[in-house]
Length: 337
Image 1 (cartoon, rainbow, N blue to C red):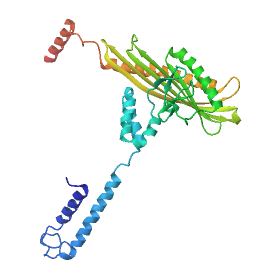
Image 2: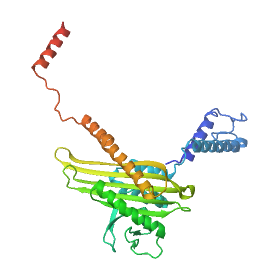
Image 3: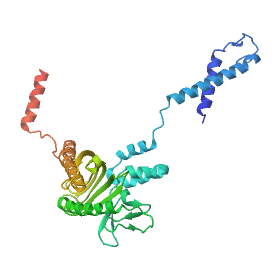
Image 4: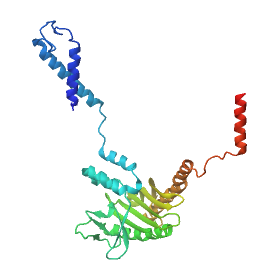
């Protein structure tokens, strides 16, 4: 196939040849060019002009070409359009396409949580990017990595005490709201006395009356910035919920309803004996998750049901009874008259 530059050279040649259709030089009116576009003296001028036209064509093509898009932005845009129940599969495929951006993508895309069991305590905990160091994950119950590593990150002694308290309280929160499942809390230091935490919940459902298989994954990331010499703090929360439901029934067939929802919230609160960090973070997480749950049920799921019901009507269509047929016959007779 002819390259774009070659095509532009041929087009430039044809354009110059068109204005030199008579048997004389287009530049000096001599008649000795003999189908070579110009006399000997002006061949170089023609070649230079052709090269100039090709160069202008290259510059124009470069100016008209759309700007290159950031690969991270493009990958995130693709992930937003992929089926939510196949996040891990699609993310792995994109990471294979752009391996140099894999680490950033893994940090910016929330995946369904996976479970593991602490070898020291026997309790289940959740795996995520916030308790991972290399190929090992830290248990919130024993504060040890599995597989064991020597230089894995662990929170300071003060923050570890707060992490233990947070896991105990969040475990009660999970049991009261979800009646089962697994929860984990991980904290880490930021600049100065500031810190951040990740609060995770995973609840699976199988063999339910209405849902064959389902899963709820909620990921709450809180950033705590101390103010007024530690007497107050600003809390920034980012919550992501990943919901998957599989229904297999004769009335609806094989149906999958999946989705993700992300919300952010921020508040400033004082810190005292009553309003501790756990109180402030806990109320913010509870209010945000409750709002997401209500919106999912009352807005997204109900709207999906309305759309599906309007598309697929269980009725067989209008029935043409005797009265309906008689009215049609009467209308035809009036039109004929």
